[in-house]
Length: 191
Length: 360
Image (cartoon, rainbow over all chains, first blue to last red):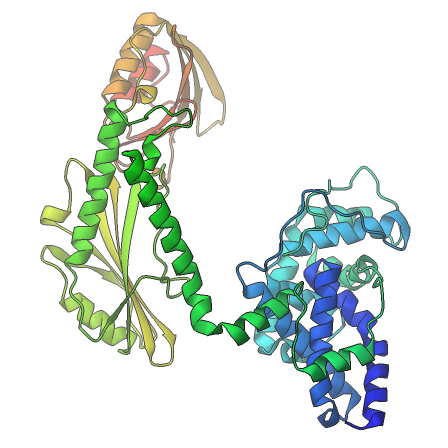
């Protein structure tokens, strides 16, 4: 590795890690797991760095490692994690609205299968095309389409999401009586 | 919530939902960890997987659950032998709880039905090149799990073969056990074949079970590998428990009959004599294997609430079923699906309602 490779990799980590960490948090619902996921993805990217000359290839490769690592981890029956009875309070920037959205989305997406959740995060948070999502997941465009459609269908019928969309009919509106009750036990759940 | 509304709002919601990371990752430390060639963080689920694969291998990952299960079974058997009882016989307070009376007889009927299914499946003979499997091969080729509260029991056998699905189905169809006759089948292809058979003679009916059926599903699992499942199911015939019997000491019954035409509910009351007569008729009905789905066009329905010193007992009666009687045990009371006939006619005449009440 050359010195300029190291510098460019460090800059790459600095640039992309924030976005990837947030995506990984949406996938796992847990900061420790999210950090581990992103770090593993970046560690696996580094040995390939000299061959990844194009910026698009670099982020695409990292995304693919991250997604496949997540899906492989989600396939395991037991991840060695233990649920705690007391849920940690998470500080969320943006006040009560974003806290409500964060808890509600976390609750709703936690009920989705791993592939569907990955499709939602890649398509709607990372704003990837269907082809790029398929590439990141190592699957076909058709599978991405079907998984995305199933995920949206499930979210559309999820009472938490129904309540969330109802109370957030206009951006930054405050919750009202129409809010669906949020199961506090769902907040902080990690699959 | 429309799909469009959700799709439109989802990016913004996800953006607001994902909190900012608590700290930045350090590129230099990631490079060092990567160069050292090992992912060693014990808290990482992914790293745990990698570590598992590297040091123990695929064989251990597959066999470990089996070894753990055998250890648990060995401990349970040892405990049972030393205690002198079956583990399930011991109540939490230490008293021995053995099924008695009708419960014991019903348990015997269920066990006899299961044994009959096992004998039937054992009568299928497959080529020596077909490899038997004890684990689910796919979603469609999964071993059945019985609901202990249901009257339906199922057993299955699985095989893996290199034959095409249609070839395998041809073999199965031409090597059926005796008294198993041809049933229905879909047009088989090289990838998928399915057929249903009806056992006759010794398999068809006994005092313990009825309605036995066999389904064969053959599915290509991957190129060159085909899975075969033969599943046998039967309804075991339960004896009525005291909870499913109306006591002779009934003092009356409140009746609500719902018309299928006008959707109106007619309320009435039976005196002690009429209620006792109706209760006697209901008690004489035999529990059969007919499923509730066999009443596709229900006629008028009635809810009877019998009162007695033992307490109220609710019976829901659906009429207009094709044939037979199906008594479903409920937590409170029971449900009866029956053909138009004596019980419902008696009920209508007792309440001075026309015989065609609630029918089209």
